[in-house]
Image 1: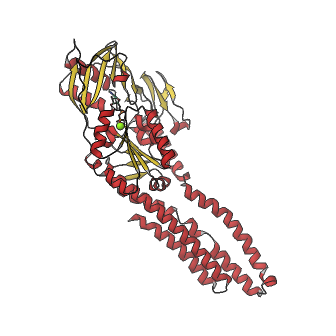
Image 2: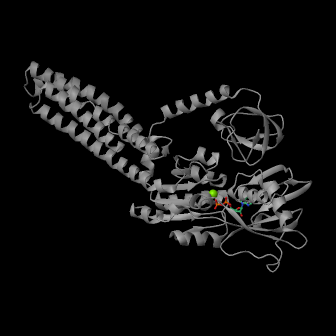
Image 3: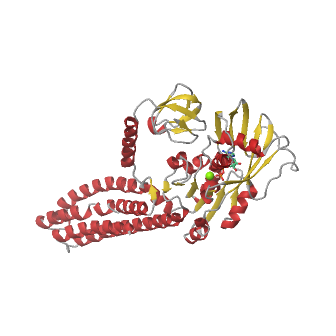
Length: 473
Ligand code: ADP
Ligand code: MG
């Protein structure tokens, strides 16, 4: 089995060629990636890093996959959103207070308020019923579960309920460019060889290496080479440098494909190879010699056009674009989409830094991305969002929320649902607390009997639950 960079390892296996680091956190809980060389075992459900690995599968896949599913289910069951955790902590203290107050109410009034024993015990019983915090505890989960269900029907997959709350509070969103705001359906439009090489040589060498790439640019180069029926060599020792390019051995030579800064040698003067304006350009080099440039175009996602305006209408104050591509290419796409702020030529760790900076200013920040190079930013953002379908496995694994339709047009819906969920939770808690308060006062004044207390208490619990179910619609 050939494993590309950033891919999830689908079955247990043993490395028979290549070298990489593998994140085994989903198996071992250890988040530091482990080095894997020939002879090492790798496990299903772990994530490949930047190297290309060839594996031999030695066990039937069911045995390992099942383990992982069990683990995921267990994890989902133990994860509770912060608001629910808070309410449950509150409830634990509250319940004790109620028991103590109940005992006091059942014993003291005959002495200090002159009530008879029958009334005292009766009211203490009603107190225990109406003061119990069922409605309070039921204020949150029905809202979040309904919201997640609604999301699922619109192709929005939340990894847990907390993400629904978090996306409702988001004030700033960062978008990756390639593959996120653009379709990632990239095409090679031009190949310019340096003196002494032919177009086909450049394309074939680059494609031999990119054959192992998971990046849309790599796929485009391979497609272009195949369309011309070029013969590809088998590259070895392939390593991907996320956000920069790819490097490896082709026919005994060290070959590099990537952005200009990633080349081991300086570019030739602009006269021999020119850069086409507004298009992504990557360079190929062999043993410290520039072979030529490959120019690619990408199409902006049609649904991205109204996105910025829609998000601003929803109260998103700040929208930025983060890209590993050149400034001018990023600026052109941003201008077309109405995005005012562009951070270009970013490495994965730079994307993460921009998110941190946005978090200082806006508190709740979402990041939308698809690539290996977006994973750190997706992880640190309050809500990491990936597109199902085209995103790499690392991005899907890291993200908190996945747009399964592989389109951006559901993003405003997710934000709207989140905002609605937060509003409903606040309403529910207010409703629950006022019901409890009202019933307590009525009971103390002697205006409540036990059936009335039960109806009021169960009624309010039902009311908040039903109110939560509104999010299904
Ligand atoms: P974005 O952040 O917009 O998704 P990337 O960070 O994935 O873009 O890529 C940034 C730049 O790095 C690309 O414009 C390209 O120059 C270079 N690059 C990345 N991966 C590759 C690859 N596999 N082959 C060639 N160039 C690459
Ligand atoms: Mg990308």
